[in-house]
Image 1: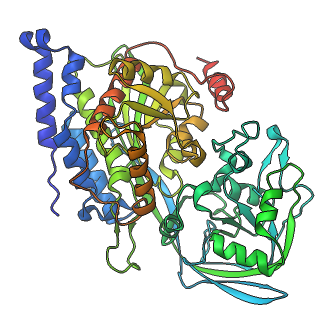
Image 2: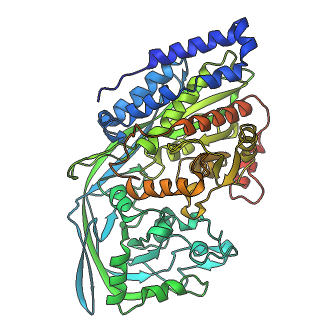
Image 3: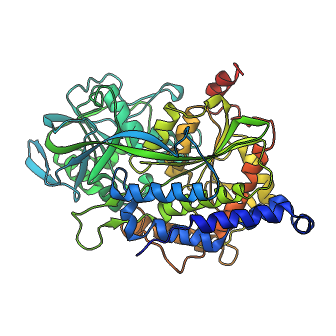
Length: 558
């Protein structure tokens, strides 16, 4: 497919909107806000998604030919709108990466009193290393079941108590005890905490000196099927470049299928379900499985540079304060080991969010009078590899965090049509909820918390790195109450996407999508940002959230 670049058309649309705002007759027909909202175009939005998710962009893998095409497309679009480079005289912020690709023929051997079993890469287990080494190995590493692998003093919880795991490989349950019990008094009940995320579990295993860490995959608590694990963690795996070449990480991180895990527990003479039931209590103690694991990963290591893309609309009298719209431009690229379709087009995830970022930028660029505060449009890289682009920006900010008023993140937009409601992931965390509630109510829509809080989506997209840095970050999502079909139908569509297309080559643009609901949402997001960019207040986190103390300390010096 040939990609048609549209900067001249975008610039023309902005010029026309500016003229409409500045001329007398238009002033009586439409307010400047209405005129800007009118530039959020279904046709342009569709064309952006279609282009960014086309085969020509090769799945938008970081540090690939697909990246070069993607960031050039974004730069052309932003520049054509009349926006300014967001990083000095450049639209780019370089992000140093290292990628590690494990040979896919590695066999995980597990031995015990009942002999040795060999587990196959992709089918029975997935494993990788974050250590920047051509080869890593665990040999006869004792397997220890550590329940959920959580150390959380505030919950009086320690799954590693009395255990020395140096040189050992820990086997860990996914999610957290709150989800497992549905007890609202335990952790956050059904809503996953950060302790339930696989990223935390590997980090905690490393803090205890483990050689390896294997998470048992179960679809419901993980919130995605094994196919997602296969596609997400095979092939080239990226990370930020650390001073110690990530030698502080465990040598081997990975997943086991539930079938493989059950077999291993049975070989060990252990009852998986009984131990899982014990692991939901504070009295749980780690269990040595009487098994030893051996695995050698031979790696291809490549250091590279990827890019965040930044475009700025400078403000007027409060130009040194910034509101940020963000979306990740990357996806999983191309996997040449696959037969048939090898391109992970990432149409919904996240060409839809990147296209929304462009539509918002065009709307702000069309304003006849710039807002009081500056507005930054930030397209980050390597989200799919662990939120790396946003993590790099958060630790190397172009604009001071204490002058960054708030952020709004878009990761996967509505492709199934208009909704009566809109969802906030992490509902109740910050005062930003009130801004979205106001504009949604004016449009006759209700606001609701995440109906799938157990999936931990608040910890799975780029706003989380802003939140950890203390910056209030709003993460809205499509609603679930479809105007025509209702909630059950909408949830079925979400479930079908997650099972059939999420992180798979089948996540492709579909001409049958109904993107009018996405346009509704983009217009809401514009109004939220426009209001914040024209006021002097600093929205804050609500009392009791884990990010408020960082923000309060940051703002004391202002």
